Image 1 (cartoon, rainbow, N blue to C red):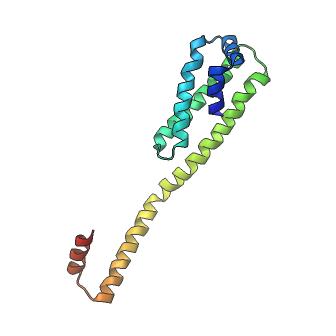
Image 2 (cartoon, rainbow, N blue to C red):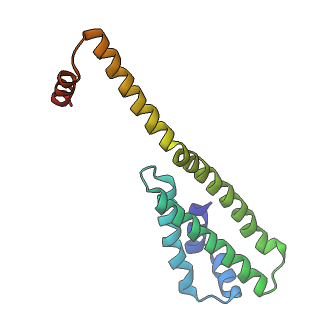
Image 3 (cartoon, rainbow, N blue to C red):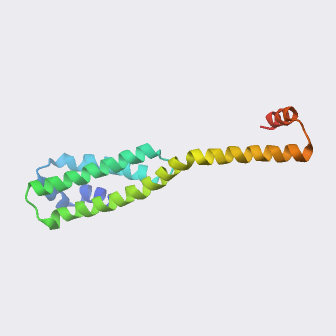
Length: 146
């Protein structure tokens, strides 16, 4: 979606006509292209921080809402502005699918830490019982290995 719009904004003369019809200067077609490419890279690269991905989603939302407002302001019909509404819905679904796993992980993080801590404690107890070592010896040996 974004890759095509970037190419279209740079290469296709029809897109240049639409931008001039909406009242935007010719150079304005190029600036959003770079921002869209940067946002696309942030969204598809797995090592991007979640906060940066949220900003990319926010940027795409601003662009799509601005496109909708621009088309409505000049009196274009649904054939012109429905694309931005459709992409806004798809982008919202994409954002929700990104956000829901993050929220669930955040809520469960405390429980997971407790579980891991409990597992370590129970493992120490089992080792202690099996080897009949004192707590001090067990801690000393554990510090050496870690």
